[in-house]
Amino acid sequence: MAESSLQIQEAKKGDVCVVTLAGRIDSTNAEQLMNRLRALLGAGETRVLVDLKQVVYLTSAAFRALLVAADEAERRAAQLILCSVVGQVRELFEMGGLLEAFAIHGSYDDAIRRLG
Picture 1 (cartoon, one colour):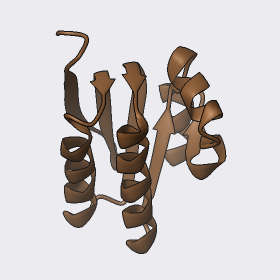
Picture 2 (tube, rainbow, N blue to C red):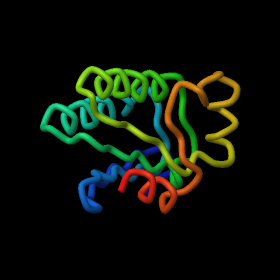
Picture 3 (cartoon, rainbow, N blue to C red):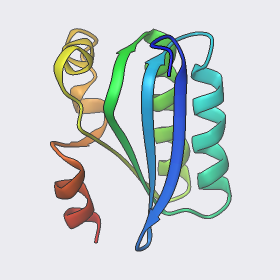
Picture 4 (cartoon, rainbow, N blue to C red):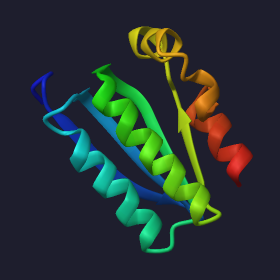
């Protein structure tokens, strides 16, 4: 995987749809992420966990994509939760004042336990 690309993988863990992201999220691929999350919610997923552990960098376009998806989840009475927001990615969330804008769990295991 090139560091500048974004990989999106989906898997089911019980009734939770886990979306694992890897790479960099920026203006070249943030719309792809937003559309993928909105499509999952539109298809009836009510519990979506976005795992950011393998994300190396994100820009304001990534924050916008996640905020739009979180709003969509709220409109549909679904849950969109982030986990493994660590390192530089966490610092970017802090600098943007966005830690409180999302439900964030420290680890994948913690998030699955709370959703299950």
